[in-house]
Length: 98
Image (cartoon, rainbow, N blue to C red; front, side, top):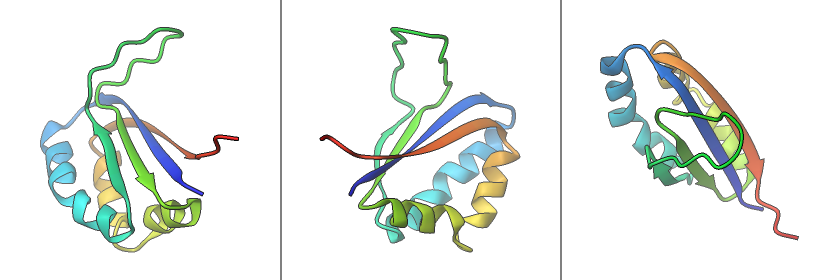
């Protein structure tokens, strides 16, 4: 079953690090079968106080693929780089349309 990784980038404190992350993460994501659904699209909040500065949604074929990517040795240094560039939230959501 499809899984989605949603990053809520709350605050970017080091744009240079974030740019480095953005330019190097895509090949690793693709290696784990991830496809970007959106990167930094316009946000129009209809309910609540959700206000990401740079929303990212990544689609994976399964939750196992998403988890493997996030826990991989390949992604680990980039995850650390991203975390040093600001404040983020992330959630993995299994796609269930039933």
